[in-house]
Image (tube, helix red, strand yellow):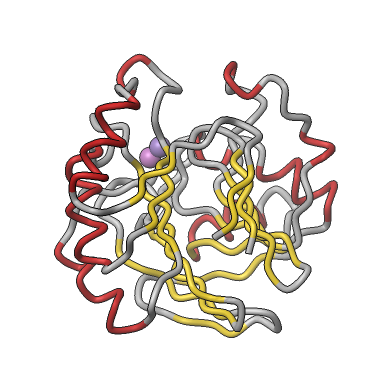
Length: 226
Ligand code: NI
Ligand code: MN
């Protein structure tokens, strides 16, 4: 599995020849100006919640790639109202088997409203289970005790967690999350994009390494093997 980071909380994972894209927010992100939407491949697009910084480019990429959108019932309804009907609605706690992988919708402690004010349902995270390995993307969330459930369901190769603080957990809580997840490889996301979430990279990485956990803060455009 190969992960490519597109800035903020947007990344894709290549798995069994398919491209799974998460939370596309590229064109409004000044830091991601070198990423071209037209070059992003997607067979599936996962939307963790309705906030603009997670859904901004969803419709355009879904239309240009023909990708299926996987999200909450409410967000899929909202996309359907824009004539984007190839979606798969889910809700917290549910699991579904796609041909190449399974996805389990996990609890996230956050909020979720769409850019036009429509209610987006519960914010969620995604646990992806596949023959090539398993990974967990928490979505925007606080540190929650629910994360202790994840190792009961899957051994993780990696977890993708927000580390920017203010709107989500910061890197110290993300390090506690890694321990609950029993996962030693963390990809940090949701940092540096806005003033409120700028972090000290060296401090964050050393905080994790003191706990024996690898924290990767990828550069935009960088790929990481999971
Ligand atoms: Ni959010
Ligand atoms: Mn966010």
